[in-house]
Length: 116
Length: 113
Image (cartoon, rainbow over all chains, first blue to last red; front, side, top):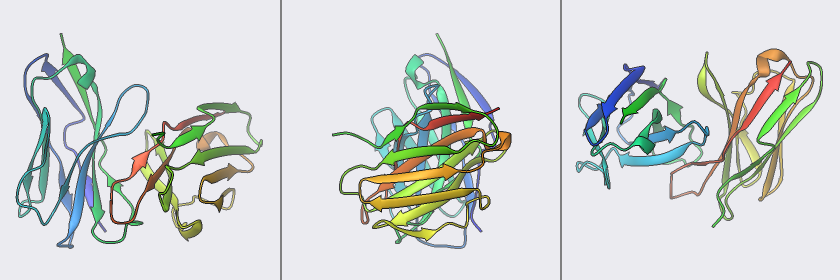
């Protein structure tokens, strides 16, 4: 079974600074997807970024980028120029390639606090 | 373009009552998922549908839970009878084959007293 581990229950960052959230996963599959979702206090689950395992290039979305290390099964999220609105729970998630119905396996989440 | 719509957003009920949660997926999406989020267990998949057909309901906790998808634009998750341990946030998500990303609704926060 696949597992996703987020070892940092809480992180804090100063506004305008950079923070990195860690995620590791365990799988025997070679093709899969990885995602970061953001959950603000409103509880909405918002997709931040996704990475296909076959791609060597790290995904980037504006201030959000990932460091994907396939051999190490590591998928960290870097937030640059942190903003107050970035404060939220962040969930790392994994999905096997191919079948769009395959379930997402989520990590336990990291609560990010942004200090003004 | 509307995202996934869920109703109600909040539900407070008493133990033993029937609860029905509703979801409208993104138009054109052919997969629909029901997740439950609790502090103890995090996010768990309950059931998912493909083209309105339930494919995997192994995550449904027990017979008190049932889900239906009568058409491509509507699904329900029913709990009967409800219990306090069912208190959680229930999310509906949808995706399109070939696109792979699941888009989540705003969730329904259920409190069973």
